[in-house]
Length: 317
Image (cartoon, rainbow, N blue to C red; front, side, top):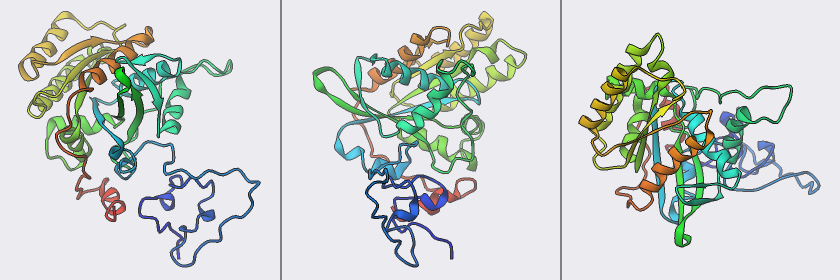
């Protein structure tokens, strides 16, 4: 009989970290349904008991955070390899250096392990290893969607828990083409629940050999979001702006933006100027800071693979 955790909010049996912080899941009394595991009594061994693992958050984790105050969910949309994860990681590194996002200061995070995993790629801390871009967010992640968390403290000591989606671009490409695509449930959840949106346009692709497809993908995504966004703050990010698309290419995307999301704002970013990454994330957080949340975050109801595991694992929450 396979051992598994009896805690409905823990998924250590699926290879994730123990929800109570045990280094070895078998040290947790909730580990085996067949027979209680013996708790390790060796107090000299390093251990920690916290209600989060430090990885990217799932919806079960939100139950520990959303009741404590106002929160903001930012949906970060864009095609595969558009630069979404790099944008978020650049903002995180800026906070670590003591900077602010939208006038708010860093006050903690429940997903530090996930942030650090991404930030490792960008750091100049190993002479034998050159910095690289963060790894591609895989389509097969179990917790849908993956959420990166920042606790921020703004003017007049106001506190916000900010959740930023780090989702594979393939979800949004499929959603833009077909709204009810079964493999785009994560994109639909993001659209329904986000307080604000960032749409990432990849200037490198828009100026390269696939520029026609990149233009169509970006316009389709803007059009799809325009049918759903209402008045929620939206920011179009021209990512990798050291590559310059032709004027006609930019104009075609701006026409779609003005037609479908007329209140959207624009900003350009490049890794050659890291402060632009911080400015983009800070701008959308500042825009959403005082916007009241209309509906509580809810679990998506999923029916098809590869998301069927998510429904099974959260059925008890």
